[in-house]
Amino acid sequence: MKFAEAVVNVFKIPDLRKRILFTLSLLAVYRIGGHIPTPGVNTEELQRMFEAAAGTALGLMNMFSGGQLEQLTIFALGIMPYITASIILQLMTVVIPTLEKLQKEGELGRRKITQWTRYLTIGLSIVQSAGIAFGLQRSENLVYEPGLGFVVMTITTLTTGTAFIMWLGEQITERGIGNGMSLIIFAGIVVGLPSALQNIYENVFVTQQWNMFQLFLILGFMVVILAFIVLVERGERRIPVQYARRIVGRRMMGGQSTHLPLKVNSGGVIPVIFASSILAFPQTLGLVVQDSPYLTQLLEPISYGEPLYELLYVLGIVFFCFFYVSIIFNPTEVADNMRKYGGFVPGIRSGKPTADHINEILTKITMVGGLYLALISVIPDLLIAGARVHHLPFIGNWADATFPRWVLDGLNVNFYFGGTSLLIVIGVAMDTINQIEAQLIMRHYEGFTPRAGRIRGRRSFG
Image (cartoon, rainbow, N blue to C red; front, side, top):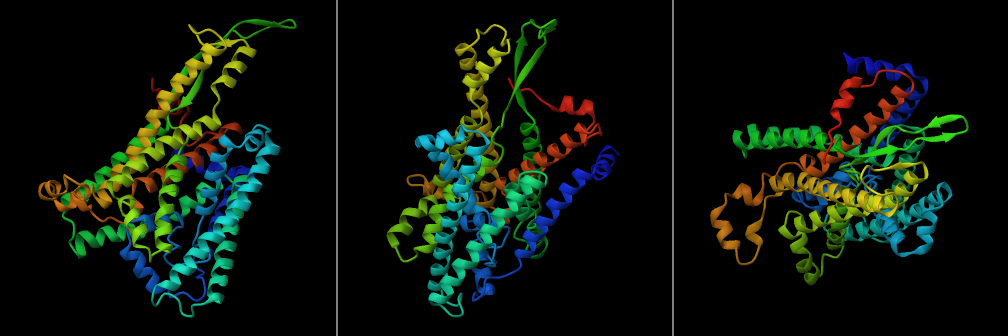
């Protein structure tokens, strides 16, 4: 009843109703564009190639594009070039003083960095679309009329599609509800869930590749992972803060106790998306340069599902957790502002000791958050693609003889049930609902959860 009442309240508020309908309209435009193919491509042959490459880095890129890469629609590149451009500029912020200065200039600097991100996105789109065009021409029966005309047309079509998606995401962020780029990825993943369910049904009841134990195993893992994600996403570490009494004019100010909330997972799904994007880049290069046996041999150990890939994936997620938190949260600045307004952490001196105390707690919970993201992302991947420890030297023969094949090679589930996709879907859904609920509460309406439930739902990690 509370949820239904909150939904009704959403459409009672004109501004919120307008924002939600605007967001849904642009997402509908994005899905319509996903049915317009790039001219000159044999989409049936291309789809067969993607079906054969299911559970690889190609499947990851296809997931982020909402299944449009396997059909090579005008939106085939999806939002990946924008994500890659954002990663590059954020990494360069650390080493280039000009970018660091712009980042500290507030709204004006943010707009300048956003503009450079757009330019870099267009450049990356041109490079990636050119690689796709040349790669398609190398394969037989994929292109009807190969040549310079096909390459130019493909580059123009895919680059324009990416620029339009980027514009859609920015419009949703500014005039809609939620983060536009995340919602576009969210929509692309959710639209593939019916086909994933159909794939599970066929594996169990038609082809009988799975038995009932394997079915309940993966469904059980999905339920556990979903509950674990919701639990940790709502978790935070609260640092108690006491404000001293002070006299302002004729009034006594301060004296209250509050807390500084630090989320366990401050980065949300961004570290996972960043790490996935970085690891997908070498595989994209391998698809473009197929004639080099040396490159193929070099990239084989870091292909999707291999032990080295999973190790690099975990390290990448943890790294981007720390990197993202270092960008959005400055303990020294927080401690200085706290001291300026007469606040202090009980038992800790103001100034640098407070900053060190906050930084120590932030480091611990960021490590926990990074390991949580890695665990959520890797365990389902092991179910999908298998552990593949028999590919490792020295223990390969022993592992091959010891473990069952479904442990080594996975269950070959549709990629939409990977940990990355579940994390993105749940994280984006929770963030969007929280924004809608904040709008409702601000206008004195009841949110999706009762007031007491919201307070109890916040668990403290410490």
